Image (cartoon, rainbow, N blue to C red; front, side):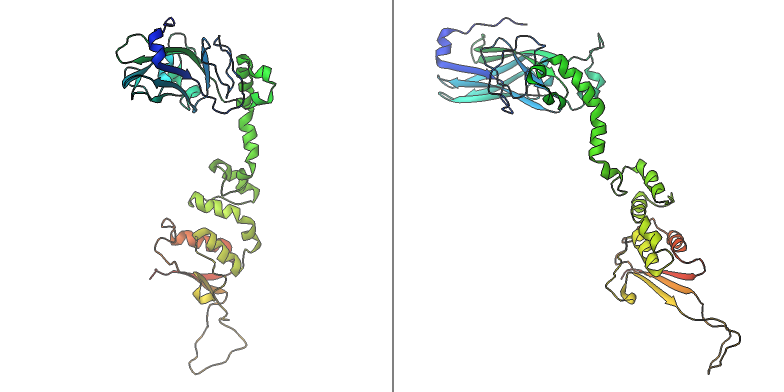
Length: 356
């Protein structure tokens, strides 16, 4: 790396520039000297700018910031903050020359921010692996230079590291002395990445047991719990609603209420329990005629042989809108539902009225 440059004494009297690593979470109110790349900077630790080297702990998806504070005691001038080293690949606001340029007015103070961010898929992306030795680089080294217009020598210099590490909540459960060890950090992260998916599954186990929120691959298992037979002709949304209401449908199977509930779950039409039968979206009219009777017959003014249909009912579906019933549903699908829910000896007629 480049040797630390000196700052001319005459220039330092009129220009004050500092480079700082922020205390983002304010967990500790102390300074720490980082002189070796294997030493770990705790999140929230503040670094004294007189240290020979600084370090940033960065996890995938996080954004961290370093800044240069410049106090211009002379006339208006243009300042450049330049980054060198392999940390540049993670800096997200540099120009093509690896610089950030800003003009600062006379006797003004300004802050130039340098933002670093690691991709969220860092540990899963094969492109970040070193092609020469097939290793995943975790430690990056860099330098920051602050230049003022018209001078080739930097007015401020800082050497620093970026350590890329996975987020590790288990490390917070250890004593502080062990939290400082980079080896323990990486060792504990192995256990966390192995156990945490199972722990998170237990935290949301209720969602796996609800047919409305369970993964699609879990639906056959839930269907077997309630002895429900899945039908490939019905979409997933219908299957979820039917599995969730399976026990209630079993309880009322063979009744008028059970048939209406089944059609409600299957088609999405409302139950309208507070409306008269003739005004319901799912209207079921029963026929109480006796049909042909031998041994007990009477003739009216206009007699006919036979009579009406016994054990017969009529189902009328009245959607308010054209798309209120899923367009993928056919009359055959609805008839299949009626055949499942009705008593075996009953006959029926199905009418689907067109919305006005």
